[in-house]
Amino acid sequence: MNNPTTHLFVYGSLRSGFRNPAYAYLSKYFNLVGQGYVKGKLYDTGNFPVAVSSNEEKYIVGELYVVNNPLEFDWAIEQLDDYEGINAEEGEKAFYKREIAPITCNHQQMDAWIYWYNGEVEGLPEIASGNMMEYLNKKN
Image 1 (tube, rainbow, N blue to C red):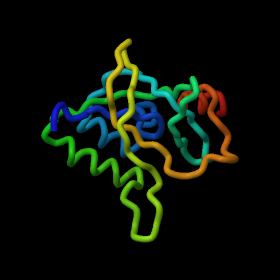
Image 2: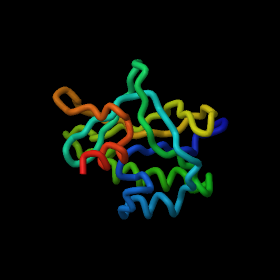
Image 3: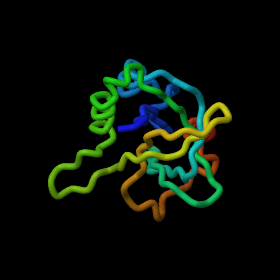
């Protein structure tokens, strides 16, 4: 595989501001590159945010990470896949799908893995700013 993608873009509970156990895992295997943006829409499910890709000029704010050791990337990302509910049980639909998307960070564009929501967003409130941290601060 030529130049495999070892970057990960996160926009919700995996962001550094949440400091949950999954973030502790993330920060053990990945280094923060900086704040980034991806084209898409962010929605509030009531318990957590979900993101969907979009062709509209709307952007999601998040953090871009790069794996510490490229040889550990496959193992490290598989653990996050379990956290994000990608590996659904037989007969169930995966909660998210992990795909590569172009991310803008530090005035550069690069490819990174992102967890897109794999369900319907109809009826969910859109987070217009695209920034979950900002949204929660205003909401609380």
